[in-house]
Every structure is written in C-alpha cells, then in structure tokens.
Length: 343
Image (cartoon, rainbow, N blue to C red; front, side, top):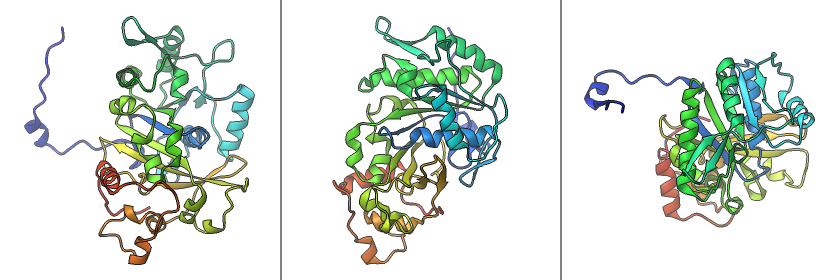
C-alpha cells in the first residue's frame, strides 16, 4: 500500500505558479489528454491531420499559433487502406515536407490498426489488448510528442458512449496510458450525437452537445468541437452572404475549445471559434474573420462590453432552434465568461 501524500495549498501559494508548457500556444498544453468531437464528416480528421503535419514537419506554428515540433503517431484512422491514407497526406501536406520517422501510423500484418483496449465485462474495467501492448513498446522507443487516436471507438472495443461510468473509466485509462508513455500530448477523435447538428454553432461546439454526457469529458481536461457552417451561418465569413452551400468548391469549419480546466480562456472558444476554409484539394486555411461578425450573427452571446450597434446586437439568428437565455448563461460561465479577446 502506497503512503498518503499531503499537498498543502499554503505551500503552493508561497511560490509563483508554474508556467504552462504549450503544445499550441494558448490553446493546448503539453501533456494534455483531450478529445476533438463533432458529427461525422464535419472535418475532424482533416483538421487533426493538418495539426499532425504542422508538428511533424517542424513548421513551428499552426494557424499563427506557435506549436511544438517532433514525432507524431496516428492510431486508427477511418480510411480504407494505405492508398487512401497516402492521398489524404498529399492533400493535407500542401507542400510541407515531413522527414522519415516523424509522422507514422502503425498497422498489423493485415493492414489494420486493431483496438488498443477492450472492455472486460467481468471485471468492469478496460484491459490493454495484445496489439496495445505491442504499440506501447514501440511508442516508448520513438518518444512522440503528439499522438492522435482516430477514432476513439476504433481504439476501444466494447465502448458504449451512453455508459457514463465506462466512458469515465476510459478517459482515466487513456490518461494513465499517456503518463506511462512519458506524457505526450494525446488527442482522441469521437463522434457527437447527430441531433446536435440542428443546434446553433456555439451549442454544436460545446462539449455537452456530444454523445455520452459527462462520461469521457468528465475525465478529460480539454475538449474541442468541430462543425461545418451551414446556410444562414455563412454571414460570419467575409463575403459569405454570397456563398452557395451547394457549391463544392469550398466549405467552412468552425473550431473551438469548450473545456479547458487547467488553462486560461483559449483564443478559440464555442462563442468565438476559428473559422477554417477547406478546399476540394484538402488544403485548409484560417479565414480572416472578426469577432464582431460572429457576435452580430449571435447577439445573444454578446456581453455588455461588446462594442456593437444595438440594432446589430438585436439581429435574430437564422438557425433554429434558438437556445434559452439560461443555456447561454451556462455556456458563458463554462467558458470563462465574456472576456475581451483578439482573434
């Protein structure tokens, strides 16, 4: 039995707080285990692959935010084979070079990436699979700085998103796994409930919109959402009022961190997300939008300090159903209130 260790708050308050080491400056701390969610086909895999290339290519930044550099491991992946993955890489790289051994995806002799963990119904806990043990030994040797699991359901056999205790235990299992591997930053990718797609953008990006309630999110410290902009939401994009959503030339994604327990308010939240343009060739680019454009579209998200004309703040949103004032107050409280931020 291990001895009890007592942490005294008075001692911690005697010294300045430790500085955060960032995987992405202001957005994602090093060593975080987090989840990126959204309905199928919204752009989650494309966005995280873009991040993986930025880190493994030593680009030094991701959409203007300084980021770490080093080896990246992709586990799983919703692809039909190595040929599909190669096409995804060529589309996403956009001229960025990746050195050998910097961005890797393990697979078995059948070309698959089997589950890392399996739910044991007899013991009511997650057990590491034989494949998971092989991957652990290999990861310990290459020491990646970033690991991406796409998707979480493919890595955890027997996962039941409505079983909150099981999902909470899965989050704890992944956190312990990451610590055993040397605390790389780990991001999982998971799907939300399809019903959340009818909500307005801030609600779609909030972690409470994802399937499974507080199971997995309750065990994690960082949760981010991805969703496509649709219809009347296009006026948040410069020139977007002329955009035809049926046009296959490009589409727009919103990305925001909605749970950030161990850090200050991030630059991109559900109320003020990053808007990313996705082209048919797979390339992604941050859209130079403004905070006012988003607040004009969602005036109910604006606080008393927002410098907007009263008429703009009273503009009705084009997407139904509309959230209740209570929902908006809850979202603002969960995301640090309505502080001034620079996009």
